[in-house]
Length: 286
Image (tube, rainbow, N blue to C red):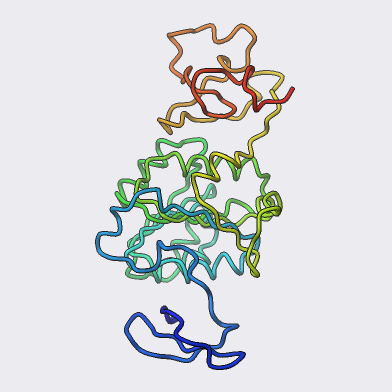
């Protein structure tokens, strides 16, 4: 188990003096230190769950090594974690040691079984076969029933999966009602490459404000589909269980069901703003 604390002074070109959270002073080698990048895992108190999304951060890394280091350094005992893409549970084991509660999703039943076969811990655990993009309401309900408060999300949904899927999953996380969410960590080579114009630290880790990411870095395709059904399913920004009507947005005659349509006719499928449809959205391309 590592030591968490604050740097006091540099001792030489390799070592620092660190004051741990239990008020002990230790000497550590600089090349073995992992910075705590988010305020969500530092200076936590019993009422830290009352914070809102003003403190939300998104951390993106391309490498599994750093993804797991972040699981070690960015989570502490009050945290309640959702892990999307738990696979065989290697990162899950790291999160269990530090979080008080954990929910894991994977689209493979075999992977969820392998994850739960790992050694148990004091962390409350729930692992489900689940695709939050196909069943967003059920996914949220599953998380909320196990842990009413979620403070952190870890996401690795398949190596070099195309960015559209990663961005859609991020959109679900950021628009789902997780009011205490403070940190999202994403492992994605494609996303890291797309955002390479934004400065990153020496370990290739990018950190930016979560809602800024949602508003400015929507990575869904901006090209209009030839047929409404070719557009990906996108959900209302005010109700993560309500799909935005694709016919209303992309058919030249609109949605024939009109007011009888059970889907969202208020928000643009392209930019999620209200008052226009995707075919007239300024962010679309022909």
